[in-house]
Length: 226
Figure 1 (cartoon, rainbow, N blue to C red):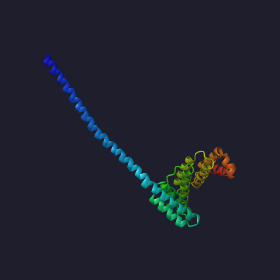
Figure 2: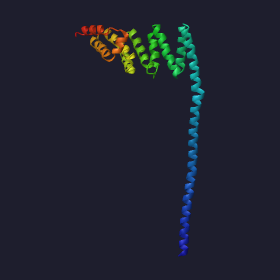
Figure 3: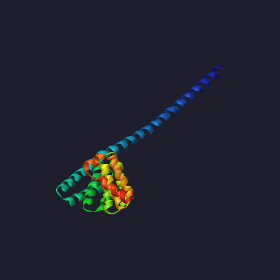
Figure 4: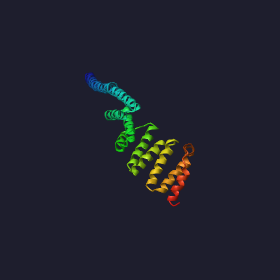
C-alpha cells in the first residue's frame, strides 16, 4: 500500500515537473517573440527618427532657403524669377514651405492675370492659419470671378466667410464680394440679403470703411421688386 502511495506521489511529481518544464519552454519561446517584437519596434523608431533628422529637416531647411531667395527676388521687383522659384519649391516639397510657395506663386499669377494657373496653386494650398486660410479662399473666388465662373466664385467666397467667422475685417469684406457676384447674376433678392446681413452683423465695418451700404441695399431691393 505504501508502495502504491509512493508510486502515486512520484507520478504526481513527474506530472508537475513536466508541466513546469513545458511552461518554462513556453516562456522561453515567448521571450523570443517578445525580443523580436521589441527589435521591430526599435527599428520603426529608428526609421522615424532617421526620416525626421535626415530627410524631413534637411528638406525643410532647403525649401526655406529657396523660399527666402524667392522672397528677395520679389522684393527686388524680379517677379518672374521669384515665380520660377516658388513654383519649383511648390512642385518639389510637400512641407510648410512648399505650402507657402503655392500661395506666393498664386498671388503673383493672379497679378499677371493667369487665373487658371493661380487656381491650381490655390487648390493645392492647404492652410490652417485663421487669417491666411480664408484669404486664400477669397483669392480663389477672385480668380473665378475674373474667369466669369460665378457659381465657383460664390462657393469660394462662402467658404472664406465661414472660415473668417466673427472676424470683423474679413467676413464683411468677403460678403461684399459675394454680393457683387450675386448682382452680376441678377440674383437681387439674395444680394439684398447679404447687404442686410452685413448691416445687422458688422456695423463697425460699415462705419470704418465708409461703404454706402444703404445705397446698394436700396438698389438691390428695388431691382428685386421690393
